[in-house]
Length: 292
Ligand SMILES: [Fe+2]
Image 1 (tube, protein in one colour):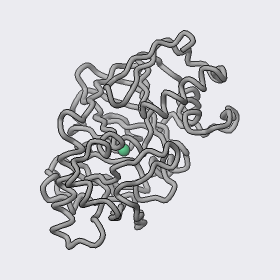
Image 2 (tube, helix red, strand yellow):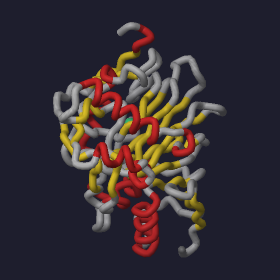
Image 3 (cartoon, protein in one colour):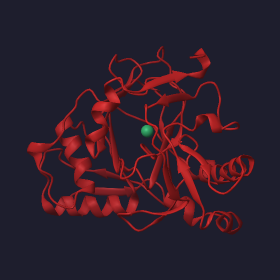
């Protein structure tokens, strides 16, 4: 790989990339190397990269777009951020259960990037799992129970999760009534991998089962997907950039409080069409612990 240093984060997914010069456009050779790595590993970490918003947006889009990204048409938004201290911020507090963004939307978010803009020492991490790996390692009895079945995903399924929910969970209402029905063994449209496509935050139920059976089967799948050995915990340092495949990977975080040390992560989505909605106040976050 030209002059980039690459090492796996986990045997089954993720790669750390050192030596990238964060200036757009990258050479076609570097783009090709990073795209191959992204497709194969699902998640790239660039420690201490300190990208500006333009490079961050460009790099994330270039991991998905086959053609060279047009730098003049990028949607740049410095204030699309996850933060416990900034006034304009998405998902400011609470625990977030594992999910992929916009699981309820047809042709929704394909990739996400987060940049550690302000990272106080010891702030909470972001956790990741590969649902391609989860499918590959799914025990045969569970595989037999889900093959051919479909699940329904929505903008908030936390009320369904009697065993996974606790009062620190953040509940987000995106104001969307959309539902999306997909096979539980879902074929990744870009990579062809089979994904174990359910999540505690956004999967409402499995079709064709009564509610108790559906929830019991989902819980058995969640126990497998989020077993400690399958979770990669990423501890942030200022300047880090993480870009991941929003379909092949799921993310989560522990509880975050407003009175904790500042943690501000600048976020981009590919495609960027949801950005304005995400920060415009069209969605509401609420916290069970406060009863609202
Ligand atoms: Fe998310």
